[in-house]
Amino acid sequence: MKEIITVNNLTKYFKAHVKADTAAVDNVSFSLHDGETLALVGESGSGKSTIARLLTGLIQATDGNIRIYDKDICKMKKNKALELYSQIQMVFQNPAESFNPRKTLGYGIGESLKNRGYNSGATANKVAELLEMCGLPAEIALKYPHQVSGGQCQRAAIARALAVEPRILICDEATSSLDVTVQKQIIELLDKLRKSKNLSIIFICHNLALVQQFCDRVIVLYDGKIVDQGTPDEIINNPQAAYTKLLVDSIL
Image 1 (cartoon, rainbow, N blue to C red):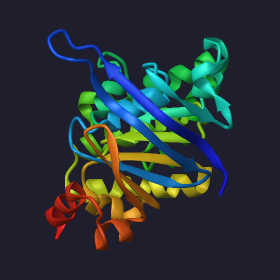
Image 2 (tube, helix red, strand yellow; image 1 turned 60 degrees about the vertical axis):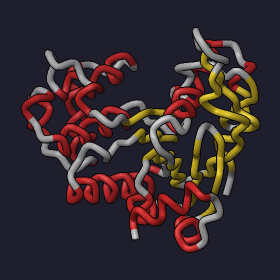
Image 3 (cartoon, rainbow, N blue to C red; image 1 turned 45 degrees about the vertical axis):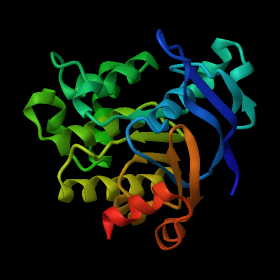
Image 4 (cartoon, one colour; image 1 turned 180 degrees about the vertical axis):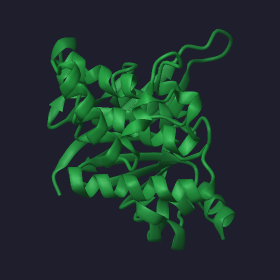
């Protein structure tokens, strides 16, 4: 499969006031293939969310490079890099944070459409289409974030991410605040969208059991470094690193 993201020797240091600078991401290399679901697994502080922020341009790398569609975004001018960043959308752990609490879900989903030149009628129609695509009725557009369940709000957040027609979704702990039944439903939705929209997905989580359900490959991170990688079955049946073995033991 074609590589659409290639990360080489990526490093990110954060300044520390008292002790030496901290390496949140330490010499990490990996790739994401077209149509693939890649899991980044690790505990809090392992570097997985920092990688997501680096991939979306929210922060800049200390060293290394990131190539998106074979273009090194670390060396590109900001306006050129923004065109590539638009191909990547994030889905966060707390879906309500994707929306203005004083605005309806439909308004939040439609914002990017209006920015792209959609008129009011076309925006409303597209919002309804996106909601339906994500398993929600059109009338949800009239609701405020606090008026819907966590699962419904996450579906709306996914619809919002899809509004700009990205090629890549980064789901940062997107199911961790949901109950087990809803987690399964969201995973099934993401997998359905991956196939129907030809998306590539980076799925960030700490739960190997979830990863096993729908991810093609797994990268295990610990203390900013890659300590294991392979298919879900390879990781679970033959873990190489001590930390990976702990993760596997937690689901057995």
